[in-house]
Length: 258
Ligand SMILES: NC(=O)c1ccc[n+]([C@@H]2O[C@H](COP(=O)([O-])OP(=O)(O)OC[C@H]3O[C@@H](n4cnc5c(N)ncnc54)[C@H](O)[C@@H]3O)[C@@H](O)[C@H]2O)c1
Image (cartoon, rainbow, N blue to C red; front, top):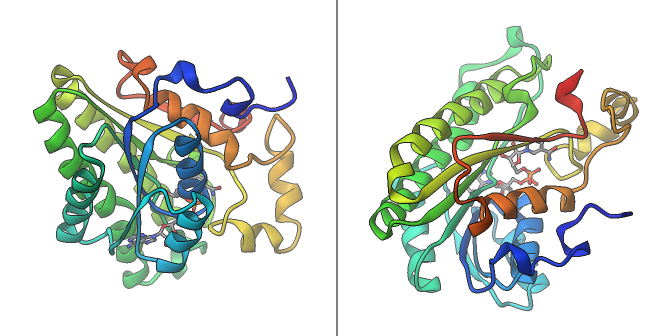
């Protein structure tokens, strides 16, 4: 086996053909998810505040997706985005949350507005999107929600305090949603990646010796690729994971083992 991507094995067994999937966040990971779900035969709606990113992904998908431009950190906009996706897709089976920002600096240097901005983008968007999607899914008695967390929600990475706080909080928020909605056939899980090269990480990895130093901390000896996230995310979004809820699935080449 040379390639860990789901498509190397065929994705038909996941049962995602025709699934109605909303992906919040059109960055490196959200964009890759949009392509992977579309390849699996799902109908995709993708939401972001960045119109250029949405256009790029829509073009990659042959314009066969719904694009929704909203600031997803605002409760009303997040709810409107979910209702828009539900309307455009004719229902909602899956929500993927792939919105996030980070600012890297020591605890002693953070300003209040930086702390609040990271909380708002990373956590508020997840809460209000998942609440709106959960309302639809609880009512229809089925659904899958996958939140992209991070190894930072577990490990104490220096210079990551607000980001790490949001990722730990997202895992706990996910667990409570999983418990409340399990009786209704709705599962809620997190996928927690290690370092993956996207716009979120590239500038940092390009600085000094960061790429090599971080690779050396991973037992697999390298960083991950966006495509290596899509298989685990699609499994948790699929009918195959119907009895899996409240988990944090680390996708990190073994980073959290050491
Ligand atoms: N790349 C990694 O190494 C890595 C590792 C662990 C976790 N993650 C997590 O994965 C998720 C996706 O990260 P990525 O690497 O794709 O990052 P990215 O920067 O490529 O994409 C993030 C997207 O979020 C969007 N966004 C930011 N604020 C928004 C808002 N208020 N409303 C709507 N959209 C908004 C941005 O426009 C961007 O398209 C994030 O939650 C991130 O924390 C990434």
